[in-house]
Amino acid sequence: MRLDVILRIATKIFLPFIFMFAIYVQLHGDFGPGGGFQAGVILAAGVILYTITFGERKAKEYFPEKLFEIMIPVGVLVFILTGVYSLIHGYNFLDYEAISHHGTHGQHLGVLIVEMGVLITVSGSMVTIFYNFINRD
Amino acid sequence: MQFEHLPATQILIPLIGAILILVSRKNIVIWATASLLTLLTFINSILLYKQVSVDGVISYAMGGWEPPIGIEYRIDSVNSILIVLVSFMALLVAVYARKSVEVEIVAEKRPVFYAMYLLCLTGLLGILATGDAFNAFVFLEISSLATYVMIAMGKDKRSLIASYQYLIMGTIGATFYVIGIGLIFIMTGSLNLNDISEQINSMNTIRPILASLAFITVGISLKLALFPLHSWLPNAYAYAPSVATAFLASTATKVAVYLLIRYFFDVYGYNIVFEDYWLSMLLIILSIAAMIGASLVAIFQNNIKKMFAYSSIAQMGYITLGIAIANHSGLVGSLVHIINHALIKGTIFMAIGCFVMKLNSTTIEDFSGIGKKMPLTMTAFTIASLSLIGIPGTVGFISKWYIITGAIEKGWWWLVISIALSSLLALIYVGRIIEIAWFQESKTKENTVTLSREMIGVTLIASITTLYFGLNTELTVDLAKIAADSLLPGILR
View (cartoon, each protein chain N blue to C red):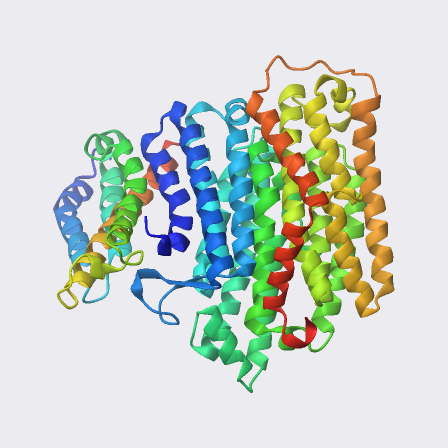
């Protein structure tokens, strides 16, 4: 891989845009196509691209395995805690009315938080699966 | 905590527990966390049951979206008992698990095992609680995926193959189920079971509905291991860790049966499913094949776990037979047998887990003289085995009695003969183990591991429950009667 200058340079150029696009897809999910799952996959694809071009050791310096492993349950926790928040405030589970009463404002905010949880879990799972595959001896 | 949210917390408690265990990953506290959360789940299920028996059906709108648009959790007399049952078995097995998991699973995988255990519980409770066809599919997948992981963690290398086999079969089953839902959705435009049921009953074009019925029946039958679709079960039960086997044998297939009952009697309704006799007859033939065929296979097994896995297939035959008879007594028999078989198989597989830990072997010959070494566990095992045969005074007798009554009411005397024959076969394979365990001298060297007190204690508690419900039939039978009343149309009550 050392000699593959084009690949390495191209990866370096593309990587910020890939992550940026992931964030765009994530935040634009309320209005158009997109959302947590797609954004999570794009984010994970960026990490996977980096790992393929620069090798496992260097990738794990920037993207440690433990971090992605812990992201899987944490994302689900974010999702559930949003639901529990509405439970505590006397609404039904995952009723976003609890977050804000101003029209659809609560729905926006609720979906945004929940999709954040989805993003965390999905990208965590994708990268963990990938790391597990390349780890196999 | 407000009591109106019980249907949601029922699913949430084990789910949060699974995440807590995955986040903390501390070996010392995970067992305590799992036990505590299953205890909370059980308490929640009892409160939920009380509420249903007082107020009637509870409908809970997830996210505040009213059904039929939103996901509805619907707790009625049928699923409230089963939620209590599944939570109870989960509690028993979770308390039992500590030492068994320590011996059978390497330290670094233990947190994942407990997390999967709770996720599987979440899935099963979700299937029971939900009133939404697609939501049931999602929970079916959650519980199945957790199950595959648990099975693959077995000590034996063959557990991987068993898990893979179940993965393929389970996925095919789930696909069939989802195709069925797709057809329903095209025809009715709804995923809410209650809404679907209303629309189907006021509909003329019936063919796609019948196709969806076929798909859903086959899909769920794969999950509940109905006779020709049972091939995944023996290996999965035999090579999974003892804890996983005890939990799956007592809950997973039962929940699938519940889903079948729900679709047959509630969604499609008696008139569509049992109007022509083809489905009823097909189910009866397959059930009898399971009851007799699987029992025959069980007699010739050398692996004790496999023997009782085949016995499970035979017992599922009784349950589907009761459904196929489709009158009040038959359905009561089926529902009671779901409860009874869960208790019986839970006890048997927990006892087997104790023996396997002590002997480090699952071969039946090695069990010689185990009765003298482990009298308490073997007593629990014997009580459950007698119940499996259906000796009067145990739970197994009651459910068989109701199924036989149902068959006689329909005038199908030949069914009585096949039930008797299947019980006789059960006597042979159970008798073989009891004979070896109590009356033969010990030949094998035992392990140095000491069993923990809670393992034996929980096994005994489970066996006492089978005796208690055998003598005090009021609770289970009355509940099943109320449930059957709500499932059957007026003329059949």
